[in-house]
Image 1 (tube, rainbow, N blue to C red):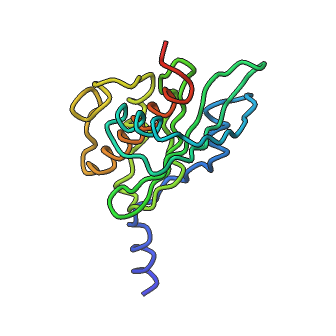
Image 2 (cartoon, rainbow, N blue to C red):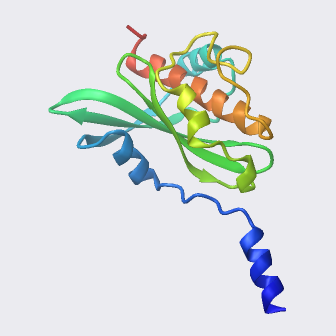
Length: 172
């Protein structure tokens, strides 16, 4: 019986340990001073985010983490929590001052581990701006066996880029 239990446990997929929110920010913005900023979007701002992202917005209260080195803004991090299939995922979407993705990092994933995107797949977001190519019909490759995860992550990236554009200005 014990042998069967051990074999069963060994056959289960091991989920990679996810970084905490603070660890993800520190990995993304090493040696930066982080300042939490709360924003309340006006109705026109919220409408602009929805139009730019071509998606929905959970609410108008937004928290951004501004990263600065020597007083200079080096990026902004947004935590986006959304439903994947039936459960939630939370991503850190870090964006450069000019409106390009620096990093997408999962900090919480409640779906089964086999539906989670791996690091190699999420790297394709690096350097992307908010444009028509930032989609699964554009230059983002599908995620085999985890289509809903791919859609959710792509939507979150678009939403955070739209928030950045509205709150921090148009990309240069």
